[in-house]
Length: 150
Image (tube, rainbow, N blue to C red; front, side, top):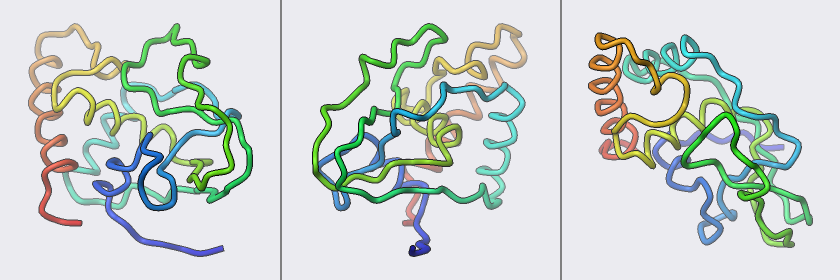
């Protein structure tokens, strides 16, 4: 077992990418649905903006024939996960065992290029919240994707 330190930016760039070193980050079939509540996403974003630690990821590097799926780019409560399954293969891959909720939020930001996404936090209808979250998402997108660091 090996501990590694890397940047959020590098991890997010390797989500759903089989053609990168170590085969990219994927979700094993055993992972549950996205379950975070709005306040949890807000806390994550607050920590990102303040450069606070956001916890560790538990990742299994394997070449085993394991059923796995992509991180979802457009999340909905009725999402059919079978549409995101990848063909089983013996290629190297990094399966996220702990950290899916945090990474799914970041993938949503990346895919929507700083615009509001589809996770519960992004669907808020309160006008004040909508304005604040749009500005916040743009800032977080810039921090994750265009940061000069890492």
